[in-house]
Length: 111
Length: 113
Image 1 (cartoon, rainbow over the protein chains, first blue to last red):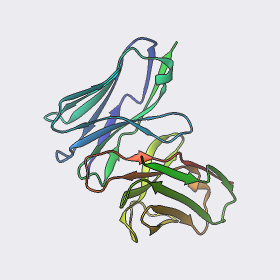
Image 2 (tube, helix red, strand yellow):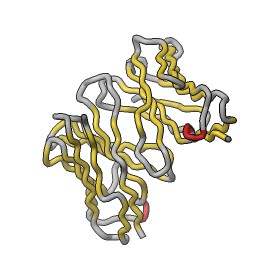
Image 3 (cartoon, chains in turn green, blue):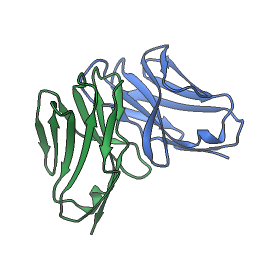
């Protein structure tokens, strides 16, 4: 089965700086890669996703890149704000039935 | 638009008592449905998923069970709770066979005492 690794497990940045979270996957058949943000006591929320036929996708301060050859994808948050503090999860999927999650990154943005 | 509901939001149960958590989805038909458990606020452990009524796949052996009595209803149950069943339980849905994400409910915080 698919194996998704996520790094780092914790990340602290100064407000206004950029944050990068990286994930690798093992199954070359995976073709869909969502990212989730989970605030304390809430369910994860889908914030951005990328499909295997796309190398990069941006949505305001958030961007995701995908390198299919190396089997890794990354989340980039620019101009970080305190409200960006949360746990972030990456995931990989093939058919859309099964999703394989990374272990999460706890991001703290220091004002 | 689609919405997903879970209840109760919080639950405190003694060891050995039964459990029933309910999840319903609105605004979509024939969704995939999932139950996850999250311990200590990190890591999503897939417990069960369902691609249709009465079709349940179990990912881990445990004293929990799941049922899907209706297309958009997913129930997590236990006959006798263990201390180790404490955690944050999340229900999620996705579109069958589509390159789209999972959408999570608000979760149920279960504490077994």
